Length: 428
Image (tube, rainbow, N blue to C red; front, side, top):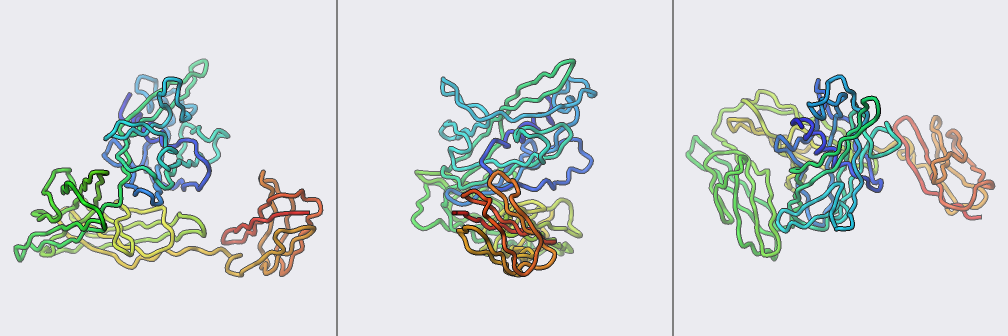
């Protein structure tokens, strides 16, 4: 099995069956690659850290190879991949977990995603009626989300099957490890950063403030290479860079990272611009992307919310609701630039701006819709997704419900800028 196959299947394993909550957007640019993933665990990339009892969201992007050689180099490059299937979570009679298994590295306990408060919602672009099936040559994504109820550093193993056809269809099962997700306990209130200044001979400094009531048995600091640089609440930084702190208590161990110490004595020309994709109403699909100009060598970007908490690292940040954000970019020689006051807003669709309304609800024989603009459409759906009745926008619309069975329906109003829904209860 080659590196790319392991990379592929490690990522596909996160796409477990889950109750529908929201779907990710299939929008990652893989360039000229025939297959790949983002984030890539084989490049030491992983999902963003989660926090115990707080909402979590991250997205995995996948590009499926077209040929079996991309899955296993022992197969000919002319053999096309029919599909890749993520196996269902299961526990056999001996208590052995299969599917997508989360193993706590500290206790060796095993779980499925739902056991720790998470779910995985995937988008297979409707390429197959089986939600766990992904076709060769297609691009897909999966969202890990929920509210984690158990802290820990989890190693994830994944069981999948790849299908191809040589005279008759056949499948090859694989299990992969080493994809990780950390769920932290709320052990710290924040980290204060004092920058270095090489012109004045001043070193940087990092100081952690523990959350109220937290008593640490150990505090250790690490640089971006994973080397420990000190212990205790405060550490001196000899070389500017990106740092993390590992806090251990009697009940929990959690790592918090992304704090950047820069050298204010450098003569720098670096600059940055941020493009914003606003969030749709009731959707966490806002996004930010930074373009860096005149950086020396490679650079890192760290994203913050308006309270100064780190949201993520990398050239882009997704899964956002409306709010105010900032980004700090540091290049290989320690030059930095910060873009502050970045606003992501929630896009209201056309129908919401005009404040259309509907009554009575619950409804009996008829339903009245008011405030509809010219050019929009309305549709009444039952819970199976079938359109019961529909029409076009006018100031007042009367919908006849005499032939509708009692129960719950969805009323959709759609315009050029999107659509919005209301739940309608019919009671005769």
